[in-house]
Image (cartoon, rainbow, N blue to C red; front, side):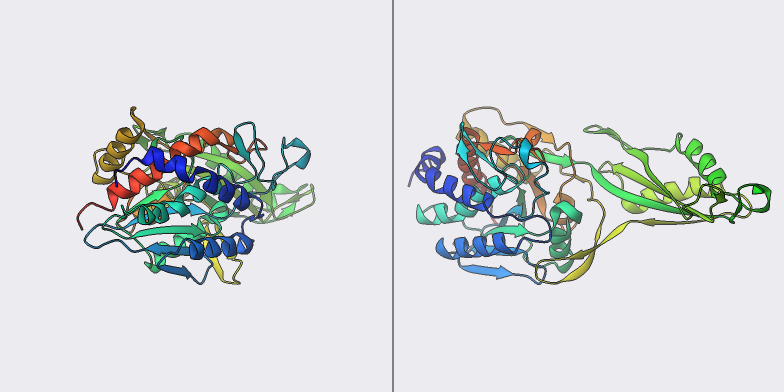
Length: 400
């Protein structure tokens, strides 16, 4: 048939709106994604996917096989959400999935259940309408993105269900995202010698080291990126080993929040912090340093550890995946489509580290993410349906 993706978006729009609303009616705060995972499995089955898998951590993977010879494409969203927050601040209840005022309302509408709905339908529509591309299409819902990007990290580490291309459904306002900052949290445990505060000379006060370190941190050699400017390192938390106010503590713990740019690695960041740690050292002080990891338990009962943060990501705006996706969208929309960075961290770096060519695409708007105004605009959603179809058909028809 003629590939008029806007007409197809109109044809399936009501069904996708219902699906988005139903997804939003199922609470799925990180660690409690079981209900929405069951819904997605049922939906994949009803849409006649060729394969449906759930891995050990609870990620749900649906596969629609192409006709053969094309590259594979993953359409990716996370199933979990942040907490709903203050219920009395919501215009519509956070788990109502209300369709009102030209929007669908609810926690996760913009991050990322509102995008997951059209992604679930994309390979189904392509196949039903006789335009299934040559390559396989995967639709993936992962767990615990909001906590530690754990579901995507696990998929990447296991190297299962990986594809040639990936389209990450974090908010892009129907443009294409090609980069994001990363984040890690670093903990410094500064060890001295405790004593009574009335005789501080008999101990070694870790606060004296902390003062010296924070002064030196002002000259930290940050990295620079043309999309994001400089990386940032920020002290965010201090705790003492002692509760009393008349004791020199034996230990002080400092937490640093590091926002990385794509040219940096976690290893290079830690090495530069360690240089300053060593420069500030004096007798009687030792400093232990580590990247903070989080203990994770998924809804399946799987236990693991995830990074308290996400890797930075960047892909060349002239890469195969970006050029093909941009051309497909502009042909469908009849307008210029921007390539831009995300202002926040995403899972993209986990997949990119395994050689997957990654872009971001979503009809959602970043300004509503994690707010009590969480919603997805119906007009943008309709355009997003057409966009998902266009991108997927284009990418998975690229010769393998």
